[in-house]
Image (cartoon, rainbow, N blue to C red):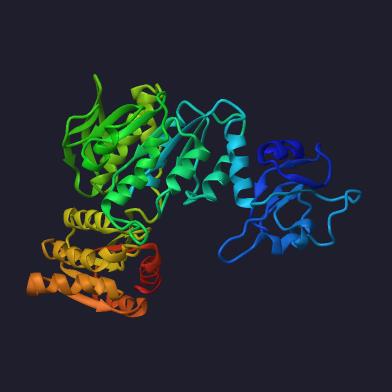
Amino acid sequence: MKGKAQECLKAIAGQLLHGGPDCLFQGVSINSRTVSKGELFVCIKGERFDGHDFLADVINRKVGGIILSDANKYPNQPNPDDDGPFVIRVPDTLKALQDLAIFQRNRHPFKVIAVTGTNGKSTTKEMIASILETKFKTLKTQGNLNNHIGLPLTLLEREPSHEIGVLEMGMSAAGEIKKLAEIAQPDIGVITNISEGHMVQLKSIKDIQAAKGELFDSLTEEGTAIVNADDPLILELARSLRAKTVTFGIEQPADVRAVEIESKGNLGFHFKVQLFDKTLFIHLPYLGYYNIYNTLVALATGHSLGIQEDAMTRGLENFQRMSQRNEQMQHKGIDLIDDTYNANPKSMVEALKTLNNYKTQGRRIFVIGDMLELGDRSTHAHKNLGEEIARSKIDILVAVGKLASLSAKSAQIMAGKKFRALEFSDHQNAVEFLLQEARSGDCIVFKGSRGAAIEKILQTFIANKN
């Protein structure tokens, strides 16, 4: 975003303390360490930092403007006659950031696709963007900027040439998706799936359903909902929609459906997609059956926006898999699969399925960390995971953390001596075991919640395995 102070005032209804309405800025930042000359700096108050505390540094960087709520923290109270950045005071700087994003979203014609769901949000967002980029100048969420701060920052990166935006929406409580939708004003809404996750504030699966459903509720009659026909909770949400619907699935009849799915082992999947009255032939060179669903979402979205079938298949070929999502690598003849970005009960079972189906000359080793943010369901979920592991084809389970140990105990009780289950309280002991135990031909899958940092075990293993 670039413009003048007067445009900020129009968007956020603040009070101009310093500078004139024609003062310019180019770009918006909330980070005092990376803010550039000429940018607009918004003083956000976070859990650990308050942007107001870094105003002296920001001014030294020659920013174009500053939005603040506490003028008393401005070094040498702003004087209308002094040079320097324009300064706007508002009651709430976070709301100002969000209002700026709404203003920028609506400055030029622009369509928004919003993506949420318990699993697969980021991969689906990237697949959709790869397809849309074949026809449109596309803005997309970078990294995990999918919350009440990250989503506005993404919209503020919008340039006049951007025709379409693919925005990821994360949440941990009721009302959060509703707020993000108010900012983004989506034309197309995607809910990938609904399962257990973020259950500290959301106590039941019905609470999660309602919270995710806020995205569909935000769609107008002119909007389109991309609906998972294989997910009963999403189908239930779709019954009361005002918007048009496009369904996708595998098990149930759907507008966009995968059929004749053929596993190519470690090389992914071949399948046909019945896309309304057309048939597409897809080769998906990635592990994880769930990626077929992600592909169907992307095709359904592309079709809704009028993209031709050959362009969509070309877009899928350009898709670059994200790191720490079933990321394959090999070290010393050992196949390593990094799926450590996050974890919940459903995604853990999917990782287990991937390991079950992996063709290996050696053993299957599953390295797991705690699944976090499950609230009262935590103990039950970890024990259930243990039962799933006991029924699997794995040879060795490495559980790191108190909660993961519940899975190990549950698996061992059910499976007996069918496989080895080891429990470790810290990363280092787990690494030392893997360094001694793993050998050429084995396949190891690493999986855990973000807070469990299981990727550190993988990184240390690679660094030290000779």
